[in-house]
Image (tube, rainbow, N blue to C red; front, side):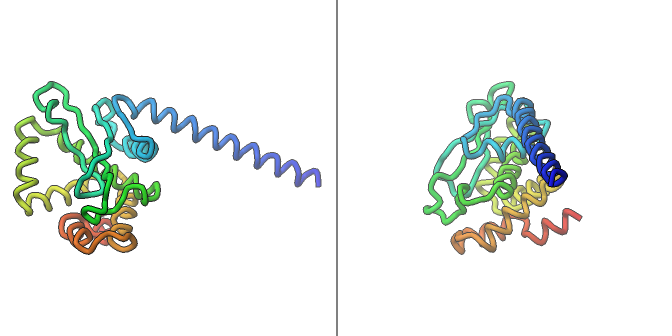
Length: 205
């Protein structure tokens, strides 16, 4: 009985140590990757995890805001920052999906949240490589040309996969297309412009 009790005590202490280690690890990640970031409470944890895969964005100014938009999330450079030396960005989180039939961020699990945030961070990482003129041109072409829209979104998904977050992207995409209550038009929009789950799996090999 004493041996069993000691084993049980050891397991409890080991669990407590692991929890503390994980907490410290997250706090370290937050200190390193949360610089110049303004999170919504519901986006902080998945965003910090996703940001840890984008060290080039460590000092980039990014904030999360609620807004009525056409998709679950959308990343945009702040217009006023286009004329500045250092750009800042906003990631909008849809505040009312009933308008477009999109998927609500709040219904996603942690893995799926990481996947969608990783996609938006990939957009920002791409913007950071472009000149101000290129960023503005990109915005115009994205709005006006369906072929450019599709090419850009699929390339962004590929960047997420290359960053090592393919499983998270797959989890989000699979949920939207096969398990969510998204409208048929929104699902068709996703199928048309983004990588499909089977394509994500194939590119992860």
